[in-house]
Amino acid sequence: MKVHTPEIAWHGRDPVYSCDVQPHQGGKNPLRIATAGTDSNIRIWYVKFSNEKKGMPEFASNLSRHNKAVNCVRWSPNGQILASGADDGCVILWQLSSTQGGGLSFGKEDEEVNQENWSGFKTLRGHLEDVYDMCWSTDGSRLISGSVDNSAIIWDITKGEKLQLLKDHRSFVQGVAWDPRDKMCATMSCDRSLRIYNLNTYRCQYNITKMPMTSTNNEGESQSKQVRMFQDDTMKSFFRRLTFTPDGEVLIVPAGTLEVGDNSMHTTFMFTRNSLPRPVLHLPGPNKATVAVRCSPVLFELRKAPKDEVSEPMDTSEPSEKSDPSKEDTQKESKDMEKSADTKDTSEEKKDMEKTADSKDASEEKKESKKEAGESLFNLPYRMIFAVATEDSVLLYDTQQNIPFAMISNLHYSQLSDMSWSSDGKLLVISSTDGYCTLIAFDDGELGIPYKDPTKSAVTEDVAKKVNSESSKVKNEDVVKDSNANQVTNKVVTASPNNKTSKKENSPAMEVKVKQIEKSPTQVAKATEPGSSLTKTTPPAVNKGPQPGPQPRRIQVTTLTSSAPPNSSPPSSAPKPRRVTLTTISSTQENK
Image 1 (tube, helix red, strand yellow):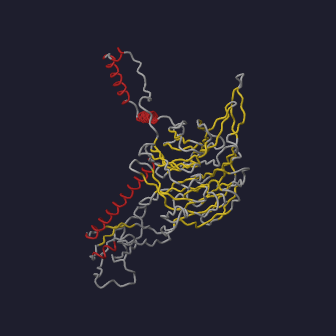
Image 2 (cartoon, helix red, strand yellow; image 1 turned 180 degrees about the vertical axis):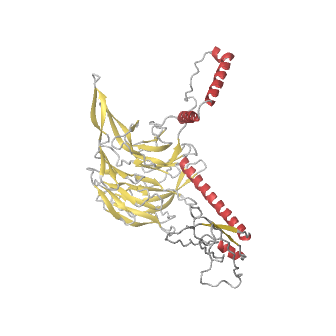
Image 3 (spheres, one colour; image 1 turned 90 degrees about the vertical axis):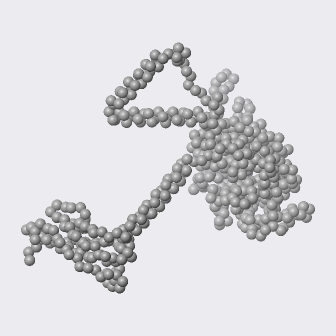
């Protein structure tokens, strides 16, 4: 882990209120960081890594259309649109223009030139006061913004219109979050409440403010009471930036407080989708209030427990028992007796034994995997890493334990304001109100091994197998067609009264021998195409009246011809059809 705080003028000497790393576009596109400050500007930076793997920012562009301090910047999921919210109550959407650089960036004093130009193509107006936080939907078609006017607005990005106004809070909305599954959104206010809305009905499903707590008095009696969960408006920071985990299973909420006796402690609450009204876990420890939470977009494999911690079954046998050969012989004889007894069991009993053995093996494998992977707080096959920013430090957690695995402090002289991860999870950017940003770079495998979903890989393998089998079938069919086109054989057609291959009672089948007609290869290929038939049979006419005995049946035989229409004349190059001799086999002869 390389921690680097570049001593550059990010926004002059003004505080930096927000930062966000662009989702990597792939290829030769540079890695960009957007920062927002109280100088009413937004700045784009290129990030390059030195030989020591330290992140080095390079100025790229300056975006200036806001009239007041910019509090939040957020990239769209595809990285093509940048949204900014400011104290002027406007949300501006920016995109990269085709013109390359050329304009002055910082004004007359610095005279730096933009390497690329970004233009504001849409302005969303609806808030009456400052915009503090924003969050994109998963598909990038919608955006939610929270404001000082005690409301949150859900925007339609394509139309540039307001979809819904959420105005249930009684004070500033300082944090918003969007569910990755597009089912709900969450807002947090300094009125000490967390509200969760249904995105289908836009109604508030849960208003979370208190939770029950049990405590013991001086006499040792347990008492339960409702306590407040979140900080009040005396909290020094302007922001309470909550977030969902990348899989949407957990909602992590900062600015929590927990009353223990007469004292209160700062904490961060974690909610799951199945227990939204009450938190399932809280993360205690920081000396100051938590401000923001951001999750790494990369999922990691479960951390394996050290070999020393893996408990092995104890051997309680005495040394004499271990080295006694007679007992070993008796054990072998007993095993042989058991095997012989098993062979004498019925087939059903064998199946039951196999099932029980499979279940035992599966349970043993699960136990071994649990021992190797160690305990986990959530029943997930992977673990997620997230960073919690307090007023003066950053704590790194994962979903496998409730204590941080890393703590980074003494970074800045003032409060922290925002954080952001890169798409590969190897870079964490932290902004502060002292006017500087810190870049934390991680080496490959330092945080863990990226998780690969076995179900997805199995599905892709099945699809590949199906494609290969289908292609082999097509090749085989082509080979068969080619061989059929070069071979000429006599065929025997079996016809029944109902034009079916199956025989019925009182309806004897008749065999018709048809001589093969010589044809050109082109005609044979046409005849063997799907949909074409070599012979055509019509069902015989059956009299409805009673018949004294079986009657001879007439059979209409058509000779093999090409697939031309019935009324069209055959081509001159094709040979003329020959006559076919027909021999009927029946029980009675026709009376002449």
